[in-house]
Length: 195
Picture 1 (spheres, rainbow, N blue to C red):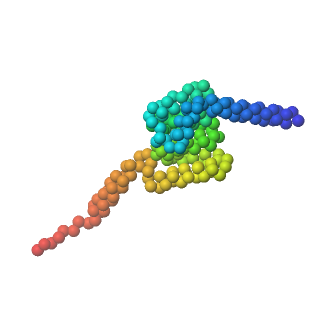
Picture 2 (cartoon, one colour):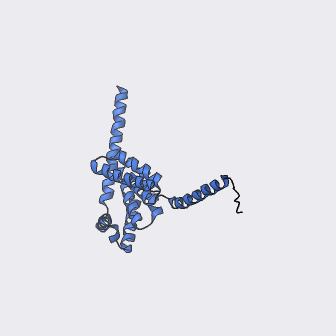
Picture 3 (tube, rainbow, N blue to C red):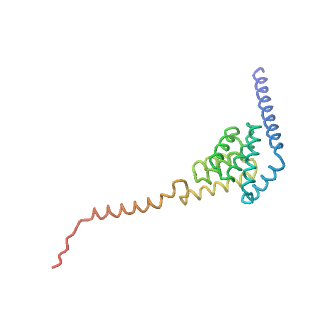
């Protein structure tokens, strides 16, 4: 009986923490200014619509929100996406890595981290995070997004489009030449009699 009460208390504590995390996340996301909200909507519709000044402004505003709420994974995902649009891949990697660390069970954190690795052509990491996202999908739309991203990654791997893949054509040429020279060496030399 005492074990059952302890288990219930532990479950209540986890539920309370989960509820608290959800409330903090909601508060953090609700605190995003109208200006930043508008820039985010434009970024989601078409990232190429944003001018450089708008991208820089959006990134700086999102950094402020992340400083206010450092433990909110969703804000870090938004910042990571904005950094990608602003062509700052290294900072985006760090933000999305931290987002995944804070919320390893977050579908969007895993999916976006996988997408960033895919765009950087690091297909093994992309595949790993996309698979995790697919397992975390809670509805058909999320499943479809993860499925499409995984299909793109498989296509990239099949076509050899991955980091370091640019050396593959040269390697094929050199290996073909080596095989050709090896065959020529192994063939017996026959002297021709021209008389």
